[in-house]
Length: 468
Image (cartoon, rainbow, N blue to C red; front, side, top):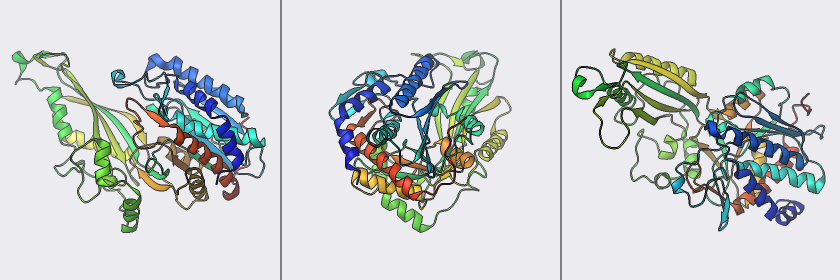
């Protein structure tokens, strides 16, 4: 169970902690929109002040070519393991605003939930770890482990500057385990430990034809329409059974034994649940796999956006000069995003008509990641979840992509423990995003116990030291 002093402290300071989370959510730290660059910077500064206030040391707001990284640590326990706590303080755009019941950056408590963009993804989940640190320092004056905090402001745009930062500072960031909370719960009352994430490859395909838009009456039937060519290319990417039709795409896809698939069936959502959560009436996709399997152990290709031609009211007789599509590949072990990009380029070269010019830009390339469920840090997380929520966590695969997980494994040699506190229905990335406050405080209790369990269970590989 969670120590009584931790529960007493959390209860006594409940109102203040909720107010602090509201202050945090109030920043419109939308990393994708240049007009909010100042707000992202302001949010980083607020976070740094807060980390100093709770007792952390070596606070730094580190500029990058785009948005800052916030670092803080407490490395005063020689011989104890070091935990790197990762999170992100940037958020998704709030559009469409008309679908919010309250303003997305004026967080309010309705019922038992805090509503606001970022309340759950990822400010609320990240803040649970911050408050766990505060509880230990305020009630005991020390932490059961050494801690390094790394909070970035670019996760929602693919973390373009975090990987170079990790490469430059891998020695200063050395840790025995990484923990992050930016993933789903199994259900409203049961937390989850995610042990695998899919990789990602984001491409933007642009097709160009005539030098300018043309009158479709004068040139229709005589000049190749780039928008039509783009649609034909897109139509070639899947077969009628829902499989990706790019030659070689499945060559490296790992096949999982029946035991693993049985475990997934026990812990994962049913087909009906997936369809309900999606608001869809009928399933689609690769035959021979459940919907949960299609979104986790199988790769996928989706079309995220399509632009070309006239978009206004009424009609316009035009052949557009250019059209583009945004493509998202979700990759599984052992697929490599560079190899998949090469396969796509070869496929495009074979099928693209010679009457148009095609270019491809890579927006995201992230490897899939798999964490050993038997690692002591993962087992420590399971104990902590049971203490904080009163029930054992589910072990889940997720279809999403978290680029830093594979980066931490590769660059720091540390396993990443993903403890999910986002309940179903939290409307992450959607209007009326919210975080149930009972879940938030159970998350704080879980994070408090996690640090204790890691201090007891995880072997120390790195001598704790503050960065020079």
